[in-house]
Amino acid sequence: MGNAQSGPKITAQDRAVLDLKLQRDKVRQYQKRIQVVLDAEKRVALEALAQGRKDRALIALRRRKYQEQLLGKTDQQLETLEQLVSSVEFSLVQKDVMFGLQQGNTVLKEIHKEMSLEQVEKLMEDTAEAVAYQREIDEMLMSTMTVDEEEAVQRELAQLQAEQLRMPEVPSTVPVVPVTVGKLPEVPTTEPQEPETAREEEEPEGRVALEA
Amino acid sequence: MGLELAPVKVQSGFLLPSIHSWPAFFTYQPNPRTFSTQREHWTTLILTYARFARIWELKVGDVDDAASGGVWGEVLHNPRLKPPRTIGRKMLQILLEQLIEEERALPDPPKQSSSVILCWRTIPEWAGILHDWAVTTGQTNTILTLFEISNPQVPSDLSGMPEPLLRRAIALLQKTGKAQVIEGADGGGVRFFP
Image (tube, rainbow over all chains, first blue to last red; front, side, top):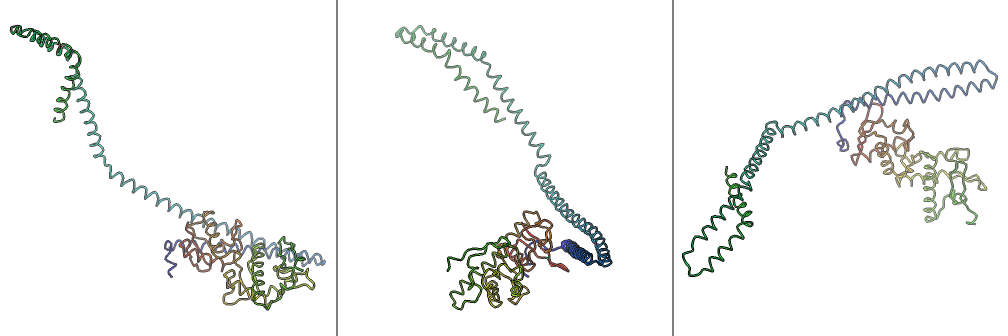
């Protein structure tokens, strides 16, 4: 009783297949039996011939012929049965395949549900926006970064500073100090200040952009 | 005397152990310890021969035609001894009882001990072979009749296997959920699971 629970339930289909196969087995067994009779009849015929009884041998051979016909008929029946069995089994396999296809289909549908067209569109839009936005930033940075202009500005500033330093000639008490002070700024203003100022200008731009 | 005994190769190609050429081997040994050794030698010999010649059944009655070319003649009878010896019915009966007790034989029909099916492989071994066969021939999950297992179109290890033994092996597989028995109107069927 407890054993019957193991495995899938036995369906009417299963029983039909079993009965069909049992039928086929019966035909096979019947064929075996006929084969034995066939062999026996042949032996009888040979024995009868050896004893010189031709009529008996003939009877045996006739019976043998009849059995042979039977065997041929059962062969046909067996073939039909076997065909039926294999087509039933093949349809069962087909059923399994269909079940598999169905399951695959539902899984695919579920996955599709998760990635709806709208969501994909939105996602694609978002990415497009982000790309465009990035490009904007790049462009803006590039436009502000015109190095020549920057250099020109820097040069102007340096000039102004130099002029300013030349102006205070009135306090003649310490003349050495202004000279050294005037000489010193000329060296740093030309080269190192460029990148510094450039970076300083980059940062505020970025901040403004983010706020927008 | 023991030195004269040697294994004998019989007509079928089976190599009989040297003890088979010892006249006392064929008669009941009253000493319990001697008897237990004798019994063990006999049961082993019976099972190995059955496996060699693929004989499934052994009956006490096989003693009667052992001397006249019965299937068990090569084992139960020794014509090379003087006088020739045949195992006694009573002795064979004891051996069959012992085999049944060790689960190396199934009484067939049940509830007697003078006619048995020999399990020259143990039932768990047969269960394993059966399941392997179903898997390697791709016959899992389909319904098979017991007849087509023991009479396969393509000869296998299971060819000619008696139904009671087949059923016992299947019952064992059923316990582990590897087989399912289906009873039809006129015959049994089974479905194996991988």
